[in-house]
Length: 372
Ligand code: SF4
Image 1 (tube, rainbow, N blue to C red):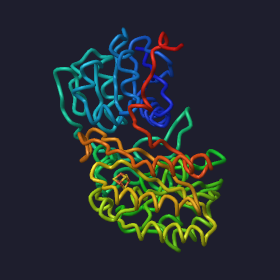
Image 2 (image 1 turned 90 degrees about the vertical axis):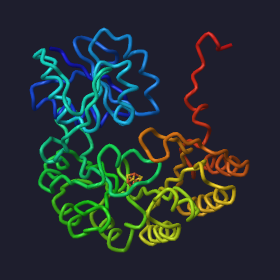
Image 3 (image 1 turned 30 degrees about the vertical axis):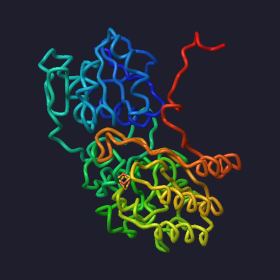
Image 4 (image 1 turned 90 degrees about the horizontal axis):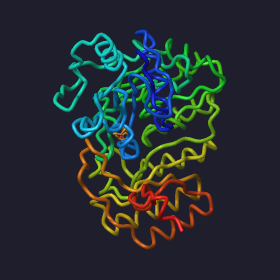
């Protein structure tokens, strides 16, 4: 049975992880740029899902779709895909492939079809699966998040209990390449319950890594209240990154509370000031257009954005109500003319990146016969 993996840039680390997991069970996921052969697997998020819908529904190959969007909307995706993987794929995908290959009823936990749905009854132990195999990936050091930010799918997919890969296993993968980069919802929470940091554990991890360490920067980030003398000292002593990526999201404490962020504006200001002291460039995420944000709240966010831009970089997102999250089904509020103007100016000066325009505009595709 030939099994393929549909190459999608946003899902490249999922390919590294899942091809390694499937390889353990004797299935090789061949990379393809269109559905082919017996089976084609996809990992889709809410942003790119519509782009692949027609390709999947018209495919002659059996299609299996996982990823954040499929996990949040399995019934919707099952209308055009043969099988949907709900949640973590390392255990479920090879199990499903085995059932299909042997022609056995593939109705198993963690899979949905047009007439079947059963949530997963397993939880992945990270050390039980390789971080990657033939295809190099980033080493996922932690999974799950104890927080419940209103816009975020992470805890809905991976749960609220933080799980960690062991130091031995991380070192085994990270030491294979010159640059070690990691996946985590909050890199400074490594080894902890996600709320109470254990910096000694992080130092123990760093002391086992031989090459250049990039921690708390792409593709991982940290939470602002975890940025302190202790964590920055570790960064300065062991790591090569000169940037630290963290989320502020809003300049209004009222909005932060409604979002359930679990930190304050003051935490963000302290984090930026500490970064300055350690000559680290803060790269700070913000969201504009949050549904319950008042004009005044948005003004406070704009003030904070401008202040952060003086010392670091801003990464801006327009609020998007992701399925499966507490804020699913809400609508982004409009942006003030001042917000558009100042963000535009900061973007031109290279201080701000991201997309704060209406997502409908960002994803609109003009039919080719429309082009003058
Ligand atoms: S945004 Fe970050 S801290 Fe909040 S729930 Fe998601 S992963 Fe956790």
